[in-house]
Image 1 (cartoon, rainbow, N blue to C red):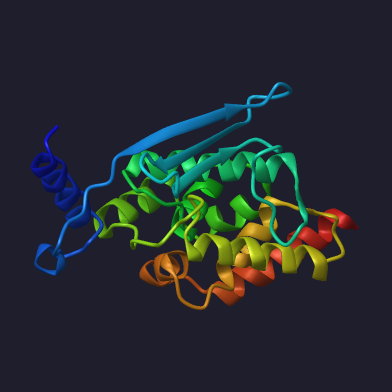
Image 2 (cartoon, rainbow, N blue to C red; image 1 turned 180 degrees about the vertical axis):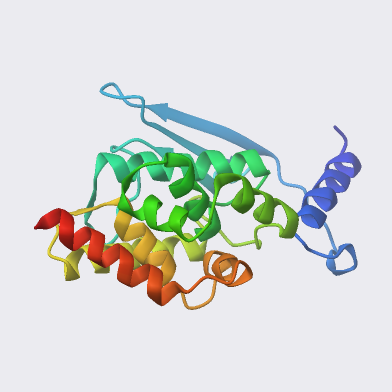
Length: 215
């Protein structure tokens, strides 16, 4: 494709994410290459998008325990790793170039298992309604040097905090949901607000389920 065609495609992508074309000025086209790695011990994969001229990192995608970024040094359980992989898949399905907290929310529903998903489903959320909502409004554009936008990185930090507070050695999907419910301002909490959900009631219900499971 010519540079002009690539710029036109970029403008289309911008419009789909909710960016008005009149704000797009001085386009700069970068030649990029993809370098990917696989694990010898699992299906894990790390993919890096690099500037072909300088080698600078543009973005990255990760899956598998060996390649999944850890939150504050705390290990992710296998269930949590699967949810993160699903979040990346949903982001790509919707056509986003980053993974945000809204994709994590959608991934929890897609996973279809665990107390966190049960609480989300009990509140009336479904894969279809949340996916349709994200597609309709667009996932807010986020700077994502490693594939994870600020809202996703914040969710991981909060998940680690909840795991520490509850005295658990690994981050589980339930900690993801607690983190999403605690989001101060981001695409996940705005999704909860759009559907008129009581996040405090959901938080209480999830903590009770987690307590019952440990008992």
